[in-house]
Amino acid sequence: NTNITTVEIGPQNLVLQDNHSLEAGPLPFVTIPPGHYCQVEHPIDINKPIVDGKLYELRFGHREIRLHGLCKDPFPLFPGERLPESGSAT
Image (cartoon, helix red, strand yellow):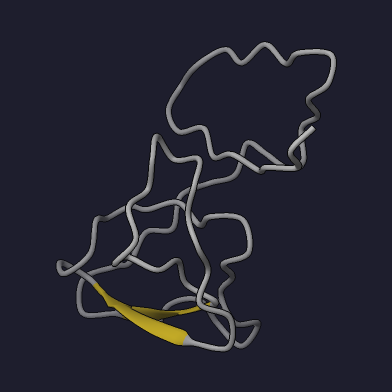
């Protein structure tokens, strides 16, 4: 048991092994409307490689601004990333 949380993306059937559990999901992707942006708290470190959506590092205490058209849209939030409570898109 390595206690690794993975992100599975796409329409698919996922069969869990006996030692795996479903933590959350399915969750909707974040879509930023034209002329808007969103803040992501504790974003993943984009300078580190993401191997098959399984290994990534969070930058705790940081905030990242994601603009419409400048980021992959729509995008999923990785475990640990979150949108502030005051509003997701402005």
